[in-house]
Image (cartoon, rainbow, N blue to C red; front, side):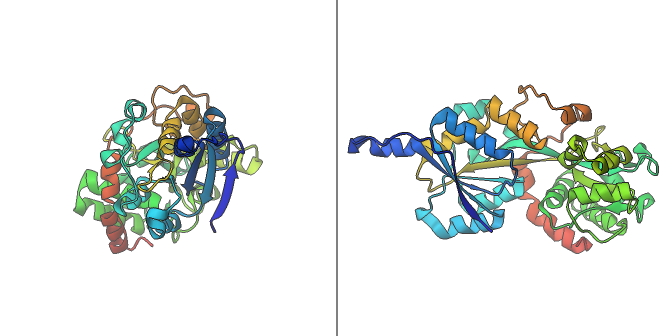
Length: 344
């Protein structure tokens, strides 16, 4: 269910001079539609208001709900910026004609082209890796060094993964199509289904826990779910970490598949000046650090210095250089392949 929030009460006082009112209105408020559900983002928004005086009004909801809401509102929509997770969701909003190009030297200089949509209509601000979790008592690390290994008959009955239709797996499938071609990618998805230890269910943390519990020996997960367990002070979570190791796949090949969290300015944004300032702020060192420390995501700005024990312990890894924009374009075909393979 979507809910409406007002973050911070600090804002610029409206001038009594009517001629200056439109300019001030452009800078004093930002209407944000967000499907990010991380509590750490609250501090991010509060600090933006402290730095700029721009008050944030926020509507939270699921990405599909918000995209449809913006479409229904049309030119009358109050929304200035839409932020969400995964390139596929950003591209869905772009395909619906919701985003406007953003011209910003700050964004051009700080956000790599790999993490931008077509014509700078959306941007990635953090990225997450799709890793392989495994039980080192039962699986040798050399058995799970690539995504292709997950479809090997040697892992039959040993794999746990969430539903194929989930956006995390849909974009992984999209990368497989792009990097290996249609035939091999479809074979890979069929191999995933053949190797399942149980029917897909739950989230990524559930897959990691299932490996620790012996329900399966190998799982697919975004890296930050494992990082959260590492950072937990609960004995049960630390027990999971002791029993499960992770691999960044394809380090001798194309690199590990990554996806993004990001956003863009909406075409009918009533506060375009504030929208651009907010998007630029998300590329700042301060905001980039919040993405890392708040949710254990890697910042897209490579020069940002981090002090994150969990990310540091994972070490550096080779990232697949596939553009997020290109990746997103392959997701509709990816879903068709997932369905053909019977990955429920």
